[in-house]
Image 1 (tube, rainbow, N blue to C red):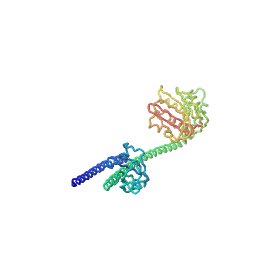
Image 2 (image 1 turned 90 degrees about the horizontal axis):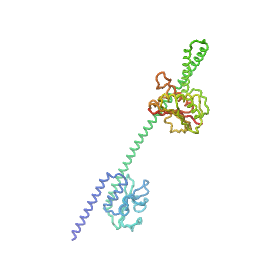
Image 3 (image 1 turned 60 degrees about the horizontal axis):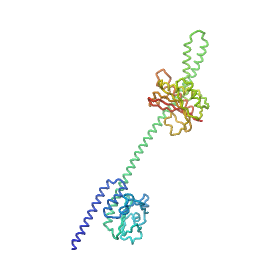
Image 4 (image 1 turned 30 degrees about the vertical axis):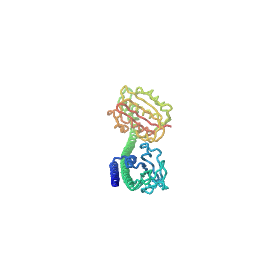
Length: 442
């Protein structure tokens, strides 16, 4: 009779060992595909420890400072809500049997909790407890804890199984941590590359701006020198033409003289534009209401109907009205030339505040502060983007040879810079252009 009972017990042990090996083998295989730390802890609690008949299992995760354990996964009555633990238990390192296992970094098996003073009484009294720390990169990252209502429930076999599970769990945690570090390194590399690209782009933009500024300064100095010399020559020519006009007897033809005088006047106008570009014009600024100035321009406009959009309570500006009149006339002339007879020209004014982050489209940088913006818009052909970088260059023009000097917009920019402001242009082919003039507000 005894022999069959012994054989049954041996067969039962063998079956249990085979089941345990299969579960551990499945765990080792499934480890590869577990995507996160949270999924890993729940898998261990539900699919490994639970299937091995550890009916009461809790898994704790250690914080980064290695001072506290937080309940993150549980099995059975400790977790009646699936993967949602209500009021998770927190245990400081060193407190209770679980905290001691974490602090000592070694497994603890208690055969009778009634005899252990460190036992922290749970909602249901247990008699046996086994705690195994989970190590990762030589740090305690968690603890696997299981309790049993009967004494002496855990022996060497259960301890060996939980140590194996903890070792596999720790190995997977190291892989997840390395994957996270690799992802972070990749992210840092991408961000470093993006930062390098931004710095390279900014450097190129600064180099282009510096080149343009130096070019304008160099051309401005050269233009200013030529302008002064030619201004002296035209002063002499104009004066002599006036003397000749007085000496011509009445009745003699004066067409040639008139042509010479017209050419001299055009030369003087060109010289004035060159001086304006080189910022050597003698300005006579006065306090001005740009709305009043624009209304007078519109009333006497020779450029057809002009639509006005003037801001109320416009701030005053200090500006040379004589030069400003030429600037606006230049812009209105360009707007008229860019449109057919059905086009619309609009002049608008607006109070604006300029900050350091709003300088991208300006021809030259403005000091942060308050400005009055005068805008001239048309619905004409527009300007190609590649030409926008050149329109303020001296003598640049899209008009046919002999039609204009190409000094109009360079004169506008020179005047605005000398007045403490700048110019901004926005244009789309087929939709028209807008020129914004920024004047420092009083």
